[in-house]
Length: 297
Image 1 (tube, rainbow, N blue to C red):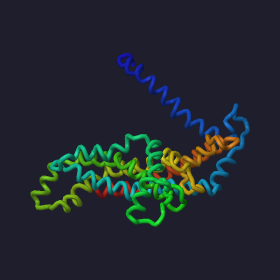
Image 2 (cartoon, helix red, strand yellow):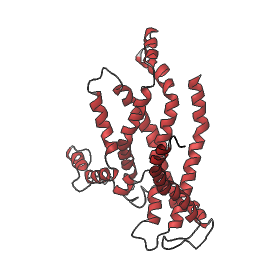
Image 3 (cartoon, rainbow, N blue to C red):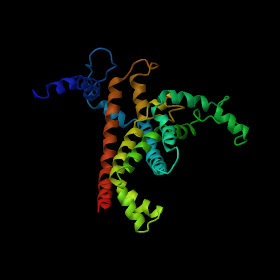
Image 4 (cartoon, rainbow, N blue to C red):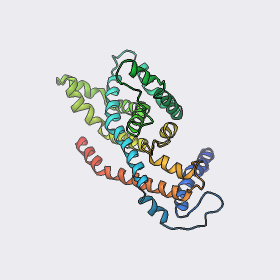
């Protein structure tokens, strides 16, 4: 302890911030979930499990959870394979300008999601937006499409934007994973007469499986908690067709248009959402463990 005293001293600010903005909110959300509390004064109106019962019986909560789950399905089934394909192409050392391509694909990740939401809202505007102007000019549609204002098209449109926004970080995950495959294995495969397709199937993919499990969990967690994009574009509308659990919670806790915020109910919804996320993650464990054992064998 004395030898590393300065090391511990430098860790103190991080520990304090982590405790104040991560640990305490988690504990407080569990505590306030048992109260009918509007956020003003002390929480004194104890309601026990009533908030949890109301959340579980609320159809709008399950609809928003389904929308959040769909974001994860699209990210796992579309974004991950597509990012892997691009990562394999960009990992080719003979490809000229590959660093420039990587930068172009990664730029949306570092851009502020709220700004991206506003920009796409302008691009998809049915009254003179760039996308509708192109579609009508080329004759692909007879009338402008209200991409973000129609219950039919709003959710798929947001999923497409979210896929574009998160594609770069998933690409970086795969590129990092590809660096772990020894070049000697590729050389041995070429000596044995394996072609590009056989090398991909029998060398690259099996070697990536352990890291792919981690990437899958990271992508699942990120996409399931989509909030800022939805809030910046549709606020969960129209008629809650794009409502996700984070916007559902936000509406009850912080929406300025409601007269009496329901912080206790919002906390209960957050706790239920966290437990459901944990349950889905644990449900994947047996399958992922078996795939890992197969690849290791």
